[in-house]
Each structure stands twice: as C-alpha cells, then as structure tokens.
Image 1 (cartoon, rainbow, N blue to C red):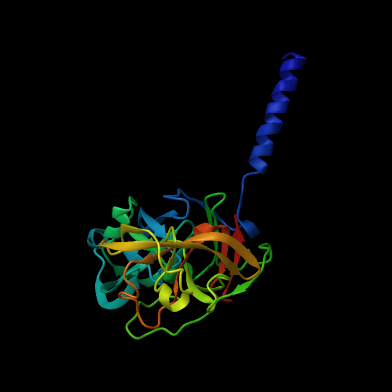
Image 2: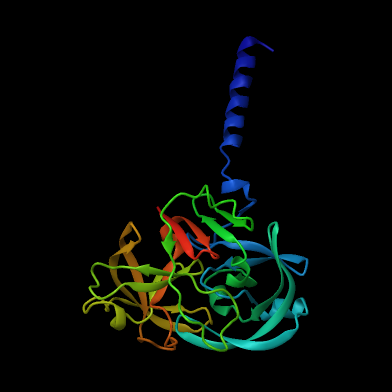
Length: 305
C-alpha cells in the first residue's frame, strides 16, 4: 500500500469512526427504539402482544389506554372482559376491554394489562397503516423521551435518564377521573397561556397522536374574535367525517418557553360530544424537538424546535 493510499484509508477510517461515535443514543444509556415517522409528529412503534408480532402501533401520549383493532384482537384470540368509555375529538364512545398477558415495545414490557378493542378507521383514513395505539397504561410504567430530531423513543424503568435530561420541569395539571372511564394513567395536562386570548390559562392534553393543536370549544376559553376561521372537512379517530375550522394562529407560553404563532384547529360545532370535565384541547408534541415525560413525578421537559 502506497503512503497516499494508507493516508486516505486512515482518513476514511477516522471519518467512519467519528460518525459511529456521533450516533445518537438515549440519555443514561437507556435502550433506544429507532422509529419510522408517519408524519412530522406521529411515530409508529413495533409492538408485540403475547409474544406475537411485531405489529405497527401509533405512539399516543394522549390516549390513556392502549387500543387494539378488532381484527387483531380476533387474530390473537383476546378475551373480552367488560367495557369502558373513551372520547376523542368530536365523539364519546363505549368500547370493549380485553386482557393481554404481555405487551412489548423494544426491550420493555408490561404484563397483565387491559386494552381497548376499537375500530381504528379514523387513523386508517388518515393513511396510517396501524393495528393499534400504544397508550398511557403502557407508557406510564416508564419515564419516556420522544426525540423527534433523531426519530428515537427512549423508555426508562430505572429513572436513569432524569439526571441527564436538562431543561425546565413543567408541572402537569390533574383532573378527576370519571366513573366507567378507560383504566389507565392520569392524562398529561399542560397549562398553556395565550397572551392574545385574554381569558385564562388553557389546559391542553399533551398528545403525540395528533398532528395539530386542537381547541375543543373556543367560545369558553378564547377571547372574542379568535373563534372564527376557514372551514375544512376531516376524519376523527372514530372514522366519522366532521367539519373543522382553522383558528387564527396564537403565541403560546408554556413554562418559560414562548412558541410563536401556533396554528389552531377547532370543531365546526362547538362543544359537540365533549365530556363536561374534559380539558380545553390537545397540544401536539410535534411542536417540540424532544419531549421528556415523568409519569411518576408528574412533570414534562419540552424542547421547542
């Protein structure tokens, strides 16, 4: 090997090693899941049920319970054990509950849990080829880091990430759970101020399953003049097409962060099928470069883009 070739080979090797060392990883050397993204904010997770799979599940911090499509529940012979109520944008429904012996995502698992058996027509209509939704009754067993910049999910069951995750700890609000609701974790509710609204802080559910920030009933929480916008049609998670409207973009203050001119969406019919105790809307996690969630200590760390 000539001296030139040796030097070129050494330079290439050094470059490759540098790239390898720069490979992103989870804080605290927690195992990472490299994930495809269906859109900027929607992440698909490979999930095994009772050692079978993997199946494509949508990662949804806004869902209190994990959902399974009826066709998959039949394929896995899941046994129905009662029912529960659950709601989404524009609907409130009753669904069947089934028992799962083991639910796995990457190296992490949760045993003996209940899942909702629910048609996922709305997600399919949106082009998401999924067979389930991974929700809070799985995620709540861990501290969670969603790293959108690197398409990476970190699940930590030993609290190793917390000392390495820097940023403001934003306390989550808590609302009472109603009878016959889906058994799961307490929703991740973030207090949000909109300086232009002039009324009060909004309580928005942190939602990785939504690709927009959604306001349920603007008349109750936004100032006059902010409720109107262009009309459009779309499918809710229950597969039903509903009318929606764009609202004027608003600056948002979340803890010490200010997010400029965040686009907002509302139902065309105010308050339709929204439970009386419900929060003001949904805060899409796609507004942030990374989202760290401590279910046990009830706070989040949000890093805007």
